[in-house]
Length: 611
Image 1 (cartoon, helix red, strand yellow):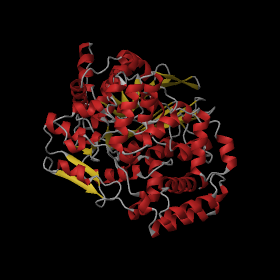
Image 2 (cartoon, helix red, strand yellow; image 1 turned 90 degrees about the horizontal axis):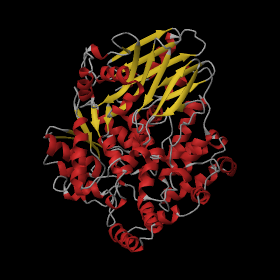
Image 3 (spheres, helix red, strand yellow; image 1 turned 90 degrees about the vertical axis):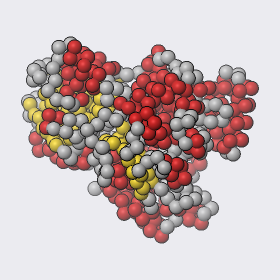
């Protein structure tokens, strides 16, 4: 796990070593153990290393192929590297290190770009062919590892994070207002190749890139919709459990300590239970965010189900005070706005984990492949209606209402039946604080209402979430973990598991008013029953509504809303925002998500755009 960066000049002039070094320094948190630099003619590569496999200097990068033709920088892990190594040995290749990096580079030499389909892991990799003068880059299937770039008619610049690129740009960056609109209206980011900076893009998940002859081209190397269409569905919960256990086991491969971020929810708890039963990891370290009993976001009663089974359970309590103290660092760590404080809870959990381990496992991806969000009931109901399965629809709505005592799933169902433009208009209207000119300019260019909320079946909705929604969660996890020099691994995103799940009938995903049916059935007699049959969903959430009523946060929020900079951006009507905040303070409303978005967006502007 590392940070990679580089510059390719199109005019054949040599690369500036100080520029590459500056990029490396700005993300040294990603790789505190080692660093390396390569420059040849018009290509320069930088690398900072977090040592995970083969802790010796053998893992140094940039790494050269045995014949010297290829030079590589690689961020990520290839978990099936041991099996691939044996396959490559049979083809006559020899190895000098115990790293997965050498296996990746050798696989590229043997199979070219087709090697990507053989990898089970997470990666952003760049390989320079010194003979052909070509640069090849690729990103993993689902976007676990990041790859950002900037290009003009003079050069192509890339890095694992955005700030290293901004550091060497010759002009001040400008905001991407379409990204800001989507963020404020839909709480979504990263659904396209665009970032919050007009100048910087990201290589999309499952895509590869080639730079040659003063230009670059991008193509998709992995198509989840096609792969799921060819995959065989799960036939039983036992089959699912066995493959899930295999995924967890692969992600234990490490030469440094491994722990689990334990929220108390179904997903992270399933990882812990699998480690205990299948891998006898009684010495496992777990890390959790907890709050006062009864406070929103506190999952102590579920986390403590593991107390008799685990010796090393660690806790941290994020608060209004810690968030205020960490605010500027958190803004810098993420470099783009975030629509809730939930990632801040994860940030604090990673800060805690850094004291004990170097690798963490957590449950990211399970909600997108097993319909964990309650609005997925809306897609399921819509699917049943379209197929005229009215008896099944009535039964499922009944079970949903009885078990959840909520109308949210039914409201989502009705919302998803609306035309795309009406879905956007409703979301804009319910916020009630936008500058009308801002809405008029960017509302029609929004793609979320169509791409993410237009699916006609549950399976299509899950596929759309992998395409347009999952990546922002993975980005936040990458920033949170790497800020504290940790590698985060996500067992639910083993491609074998994902493809089979998305080929499986929705009836095995949602059943009798409960999501994640296959997981719940597969974890019978393994997971504590209190957790296995949980109906609510929290995750690493926070009591942010209370936080923003505290005196300290009143000062922060009022300063933002009263500032000339906030008013002058012409995005949000400050008077309307102040009126809404007043209702929040009185307890008449809970608009904590909107408050956080106002504050984080303004701090982002001040940090990255105004300065």
